[in-house]
Structures are given as C-alpha cells and as structure tokens.
Length: 482
Image (cartoon, rainbow, N blue to C red; front, side, top):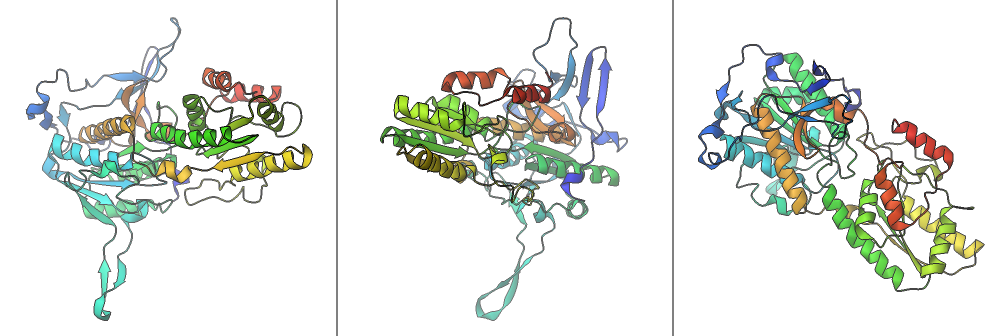
C-alpha cells in the first residue's frame, strides 16, 4: 500500500455544548488493562523547582482563537506536555527515529532533542536511528569489496544514538540519519518494528511522510502492538495546515534574505537591471511572501496562489518597464510553483518518489521571457541577474528561533509517547504545543489566501499590482470559504 492510500484515522470527539475536543488515539483504546507508572520527572530534582510542570489531562487548545462573543467555542486539540502517569518504564523503551523527504533546517536539532529528551528526562537508553528514510526499516545489508579480494557486508540501515553521539549535530545542516523519498511499505516497516522490539517510533517528515506514519499506526493498531507512533511535521514551505508554522521556515526566510540582498545590490549597480530570485514554494508561497516582507527591497513577489500574466495592460512586463523607468532597477522574488500554468505542460503529469509534481524551472523560463520581450518587442537594453538559492537554503543549520521550536516539538513528542498517546503529530497552535490527529494535517495543504490581510500587507509594502482579474478574486474567496 502506498502512502497516498492513507486511511482516515478515527477522531474521538467529545462534545459538551459548543466545545469539541478533537482527540488523538491512545494505546489504551485498543490494549485493555495497560499498567501505568509514576512519571520519572517527579523524582528529577531539575524539575522540582518548576510549578505545575505537568499538564492537566483536560487541558486543550482552541483551533480558532478569534471568535464572536455569541459564536461556538469550536474545535480544540489536546495540549502537549508531560503527564503525571506514563505507560512505559524507561528500561523497557526501545525507541527509533526516522527522517524522510527533502532536507530542511532543524532536522538534526529534532533528532538531537528526541534522543536527549528520552535520555535526560525519562532515563531511556535504547534509541535507534533508522538510516535513509522509510526504506531503512527494511533495507538489506550492502555487499562491499574489502582489501585482499574478500567480500563483506555492512549493515547500513541503523545508527545507535545517545546524547554523546548527537551532542553537536544541531550545528550541521541536513540529517545525520540520511533521508529519502518514497520507499514506504507498511507491512515491511511494521514487521521490522515488531522484529526489533521497537515500541516508540518518531517519524519526521512532510505531509506524505505523515500519511505514511498514519498507515504505520493503523497497522500497529490492527496487530494490537504496544507501540506509540509520533510524527513531527517537517516542510520548509510551511504548507501544513492547522499548525502555526513548520520548523525550518524561519531559517528559510532568513537565509533567503542573502539571495535577495545580492539581487538588490546587483540591480542597483547597473542601468535597467532586473534582479530575479527564485525561492522554494511548490504549492504555497509563504517563503516568498515572508522573505519579501522582511527584506523591503523587493518590488514584486509572485506566488503559486496568485495567478499572473505577462503581456498586455496590467501584466508583469508592463509593471517591470514602469519600475525600470522610475527607479532604474527592479527586484523580483518568485516561488518555484508560481506561473506553472504558463509553462509548457510537457512534464506536468510526472511526479517524484514522494508523489509531488515535477515542476519546470519557472525562474529560468521567466528570465528568458523577460529578455526576449525587452530586446525584441521594446528594443530596450536590460541586464538580468538570476539567483536560485534553493539548495543553499534548505541545507543550512537552523537558526536560533527554529532551534528553540525544534527542541519544544521534540520534547512534546517524547512526553506524548511516554504518556501512551499514539497516531498523533506535534504542532504549535496559536502559540501552544498540541497533539493533532494525523488526518488533520494531511487532509489539505496550507496556502496563502490572497484575499487575506497578510497578502494585502505585502501588496502595500511592494506597491505591486495584484495581477488578478475579478474572476480570480471570486475563485480565491470561494477556496478560502468566505
């Protein structure tokens, strides 16, 4: 079964008037008479000075923070954090961690803090890293040529982790565990988990990975195994719904500033110069939007959610020419998924191993179209500098803000699994850490709403036209449920 066949995890809803708790599964839901144990943190002197460290069992966080006084209280999620009772004894825990999908700043920080959280807070000593994504659960040993003509085998799919091993990995980009796209075989993965005696599984990845995690949880529940499955949502594009933001996003926005600053310096230094920067954002333009707002030197931001056209009155070419005549230069930021409908459709049906559509390089395409327009139609000499910092951005270590966020996400996951919760992902909802059912973060993608205030703030900052027709605005309001 592929990750795209993910079933809908059943939601436990407790309705009290207009209050709804959208709960996550618990081991006790399908394993009766599970024993509980006092949380080891109660005897940890480091936590004795913290008042009310343990989260009350009934604490919850609202999904919607702005409500009318007579409106319903709406959906709530279970608040993350340590509980007074746990469902695992530290010596019995055998945990594993896997990272999947593309690289993202903060992966190593999450791995480090899961290991250190299990070890320092709960006294767990057995933590295994699965090398190479989901495939690592069942990858066969690799045959190697050794000196002297001998053959040997190298078990490449496991890494034993402890605080010493992971001590400084947060200072590096990438993931020490390795990663891959695809390779999800639910039966083989759960067989491996069962055979190894693993009882806590931490899965770090984007929406496709979390759908795979949901499948793993369902198979574990079907077999009646005492195994907690926790997800930590990862996407540099910030396109996961419900949560405030995904880790690595702040770092991506900060790192994009370097490319935009370079484009601005280049553009200012030559007559009629265009600095064009392409950033990540396959379906969602959050990086482009926030990087533009943070930089203030950008004259135009193009994102997948906001259609644009090139020629004619109100088109992009007309705006570029206007800014060149006014300022002598222009800086454009474009998300990788923007304008794909304008490109050739020759590879639109092709996908990568994660099931994502393969996109054409809109930055190179737009660069060529701009050059052709101004040289052939306007007979106007221009300079164009194109910068694509994609792999530089996603391969850097996380910044201070993301390091803090990654630490709290990892600790929330550890607290949740020790408390017996399973089939959940961790995320920040209105500034509070919560446990969210898998299906809520995989049901759709989070996108910029171009009829929302944030996009209006960007248009005010850049003073660019919206490039939208009345039909586009109506369709966006419909998509946003307005």
